[in-house]
Length: 215
Ligand code: DX5
Ligand code: ZN
Image 1 (cartoon, rainbow, N blue to C red):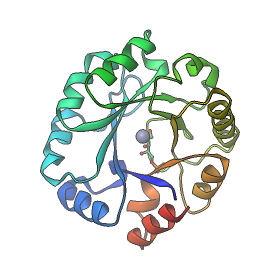
Image 2: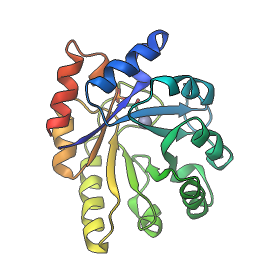
Image 3: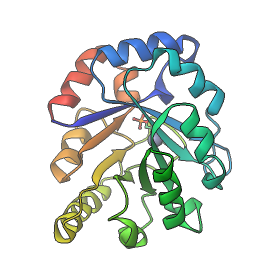
Image 4: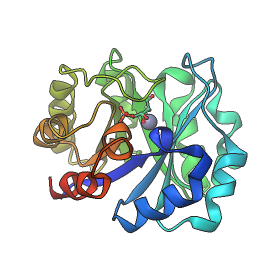
């Protein structure tokens, strides 16, 4: 059974409270919150005040994916608006080990993310310290992109590395997850699937969630 993190980037923001309510009732495990700053990625999404406004509706864990430069400056604020899981990109900080420990100090789960072109070796030395490893299966910045097939090999490699090291981090895959690629990513070793477009733009959104959960 896969763990599902629903990316709100594809939801109807004018009805945010209702969207959060139905998606949680549909049984997703996490709400994936894509924070973009227009600098680390070529798009701007939403930030701290919007996440805070979601708190009255919160049942699932908040999975904050920070696609921002200098993420170290925002950890406390992101935690204070309800983030249970905080993801930072290895490409966005100079002191990844320090940042991972900064996140853990707040009590949140610490996640490092890798863009499709960044090798696993970049984070090998912090893998024993993180709760999750997020592998981007699209270039970050936009929802609705196509799953990059070569990332499946990277997922498999991360799963083997975990076994060799006796580590316990979970593998989360983000981008282009749909009815076909979800199964490919899960078979390759993904534990957690992030999905936005496939859920929110589906003619049967509840059915999409059940299908993903069944993997
Ligand atoms: C992309 C984001 C993803 C995105 C996934 O930068 O990190 O979380 O919203 O959206 P879909 O599922 O539409 O590819
Ligand atoms: Zn994301």
